[in-house]
Amino acid sequence: MKIEAIQFEQKASQRIYNDYMKRIKKATNSLSKDNQDDIYMEFNSHIFEAIQYKNNTNEIDSLLDIIEKLGAPEEVLKPLVADKKLEQATRTFNPVHVFRALILNFTNGISYVIFFILYLFLFGFVFLIFAKIFNPEHVGLFIKEHSASIFVLGMMSPEDKLHSNAVEILGNWFIPVMILSTFLFYFLITLLLKFKKSINQK
Amino acid sequence: MNETFVTNWKSQVKKGTLTFIILNVLKNNEYYGYELIEQIRNHTEIEIAEGTLYPLMNRLKTEDLVISKWVEQETGIPRKYYSLTPAGIATLSQMNVYWENLEKSIKKIIK
Image (cartoon, rainbow over the protein chains, first blue to last red):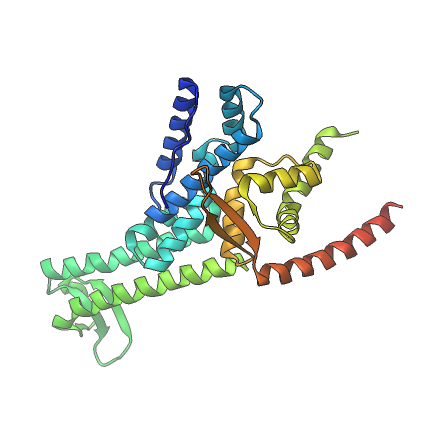
């Protein structure tokens, strides 16, 4: 649908309107194009209808009054942008959207902070992949010899290995396994986030 | 009389019943945003912070209580009309029953 700008008779009104609409665009620019257009069009429609309704008063006075009642886009649109960003993030599984959605929802509950920390743990996995490349001997998944229990996932010095009878079990498989685990955990955490979101709405 | 207390209480009541009011306004008709605000104002004398209506309508949409559609206008500026979904109608009738019971109890208490 084409977005049509409202035309004003007074230059000053046009400038106030243009400025307000620019602020709406800026406040929503982290969303998808469709969502941005939808919010923009709805506020545009609100201003237009409100002006028709108040057609007796001076144009600029009505416009200022309408904008004041709508509120500052940066404030009013905050919850809307946070909700829509979370919808987009859990639909697309895109890490950039997930990151921005969590930042936007930080003040909406401790659970979002916990999710943020869970995602941060994934960076630990990525770090280990690089650590394995630079230090293949001492990085890996270590277990105690003659026992099946996992001992250390990470880095062990030669002395520690000797001291605790630890052996590395993944060898060259370490990097593929870590990559796969990163993706798997990312998928699971995001699924959990999606699930949490739908519980919130119930 | 503690006026601040009463003012705070009133604003909490308004905030708490806004969704209920919106759903009831949409019960028999579809409305676009500004018209919906006017309807709320006419029926209830509640002045809502107009910008906050839209985040609220989005929540009602994601909860599947309300749907919206864009309708082109001769003026060139389309309107977004909101109406209740079947789930919205069912939810509202439950809310109305609850409200009526609550109203009865409150009337008894304040007699």
